[in-house]
Length: 181
Image (cartoon, rainbow, N blue to C red; front, side, top):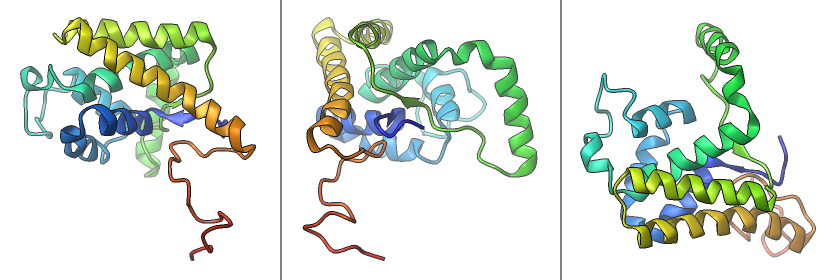
């Protein structure tokens, strides 16, 4: 995995913290699912159980589903994993049998300007489909792109590799804070 990448779930948490902190319990509730399970629940494709305690209609105006679904879709497109769907399903069944995690987290590597534009367009499209106003959709799309750009900028600025989703400047191993066990 590229150390300059960010996990989709971490990007979602960061954007939701910035734009809709009241949705953080939803993000925390999704943490128990792998990325594919979270996408199924947010996208309304897994209607067997309403694990999150609300239906699709109530989720429509939320920031969390817009960001998670749009970024996941863009990442899948850019990484070409949609072509490997058949192989992924077989691998998922095998991992379940072996008791391993069902899927690896979706990770977004540093992106080119064109790819950032695709992510932004994906967020705008998803937001429009979910009924968000154009102005709100633009704010969300800009926040997502800004966070993706900051992953690369933060890594370049301090010259040290950034761990995916790492956003604590005084984590273990920093000179201003003793290492913790």
